[in-house]
Length: 257
Image (tube, rainbow, N blue to C red; front, top):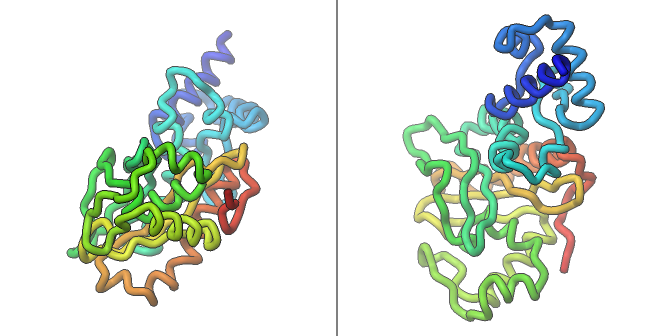
């Protein structure tokens, strides 16, 4: 029972910490010998409750947490898995990096790293926007079938616009979603906020389901079409890495209906 308690304490620390941790950090915070921590982590990795980042050699939550329907906050588990890669992306691109999930017809931000530049997009975790206006929202909606999309929007023809550039109808939205499926990426050119451009790519789980999406956003003067093209491979590399950590083999364009 003592060994089980130690293993649970390691998992609990990884959940609460919200980032990958080294053996030394885990050992220090839990007052456990490094050898014990190594053995616990090896067992947790074997059962996919933990994973090891090959680059940093640090440890984080594994894909099994997404199969657990319990009191565990799934958003908290999601943040723990995606945060390290998001942080790396943010440090490389210097623009705002965000992750969001789909809730009905809106997206809700679950993690963000905000640019430190003078002009930046300042939005808090928990903020919601209409999904059809955002790059992340278009990525998440693109995984839906025609029937699912129709049910979500209850057959309506017109959609609420956040700006004059926003998608205003279902026909236009379906075209945008078809493009997102083909490219495996979606863009928001001042459709949510005037003066702000954004692009997003999907993250898949073990079952091949579209779990979330990550975006890079910034002022249009910095996030020009040329800059977005420059950052696109970095975004795709990041989302593909997270998908692999979640056990997915999906990569590239989204599947069609």
